[in-house]
Amino acid sequence: MSKIFKKNMTRREFVKTTSTAVAVTAVSSVIPTFAIGGVAPVKVGVLLPFTGTYAKLGSHILDAMKMRIAQNGDKLGGRPVEYNVIDSEMNVPKSTQRVNKLVKKENADFIVGPVHSGIGINMARMLKGENVTVIVPNAGANTITGELCAPNIFRTSFTSWQTAYPAGPVMLKAGLKKVVLLYWNYAFGKETAAAFQESFVPGGGEIVADMPTPFPKTEFQSFFTKVAALNPDAVFTFYSGGGAIKFMKDYAAAGLQGKIPLWGTFLTEGTAKGAGAAAEGIKSTLHYSTELDNPINVKFKADFKKTTGDDADVFAVQGFDAGSLLIQGLDGVKGDAGAKIELHNAMRNAKIESPRGMFTFSKANHPIQDIYLREVQGGLHKVIGVAAKALEDPALGCKA
Ligand code: PHB
Image (cartoon, rainbow, N blue to C red):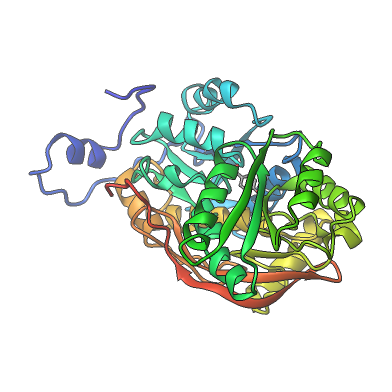
């Protein structure tokens, strides 16, 4: 029996789960219809931040996902779509009740979210193996597609390992051997720091100070004083969203810009323009750049600008790709969101024509993707190399 709820299974799924020995052949579709006729909508529950330091990340993900589905005639597998959107407020304790509301009360077929890894881990624990399909369009904690991996959990974003591990060798090659780590002290920041060390230290690098800072606070002055005193070759970071803009501006104001190179993953993503001159020269490893020269990216950026008035970023890309994954999954089952086994197979086998470049999913349902080396030049992320080609997260602890 389900841990948190019990919805009607399709006959096919019931047969599959009750007796694996029974050969399953054809099964009639169970797409719900209204009494007055017409096809019932596919229910997409959304849990993303629309307030706080990650507010823009949440709105870019949702806007781009909706834009992608609108480009598909606002249909998934031929069915209309109903969105049920909740602001996560980045509140981990409250996320349990919010996830339950979407799944039990609203009967969502899909949950799309979150941005914050703490909520992502909670959500994956709650929904692993449940009769609802989860698409994580950001939260990068390794465990979500590691220990907690499940056939019903997908991710269109990244892991902390995937984004930070490639930075170690790149920085060593650039002659940067003594590094200070500065990051927000919660799951994703800690994993980012660990993944960086995993490649940097065995390669001959030295971590001269490991300085987590409280999330989502933005009082960095005392940490910058320590950085100045230590005078490392570089600083490696994890900050994102509104807080990242403040970080870069304060770093420059502290006189450290240009003296001690700043590196990171998400630091300048969607924030370079806001930080202005303070972002110039910052290098990062990430799975996207607006400057990638492929036709899908060119069209995506123009469409996103037209739809929202905003410049695209990696968060919008991840939302856009969540939309593509929904489209391919539901096309594969002709809109029958209840045919979970077939739906999940179609999603697992999807080829996502992403603005980041085409990607496929690993057996843990996570993107196998290139990680680019970027540098902010004139407010844009110039691609100066590929830090890792077709990088697959090791998905430690995943039994899939
Ligand atoms: C996360 O908490 O997983 C997270 C949040 C913001 C980012 C990246 C990762 O930019």
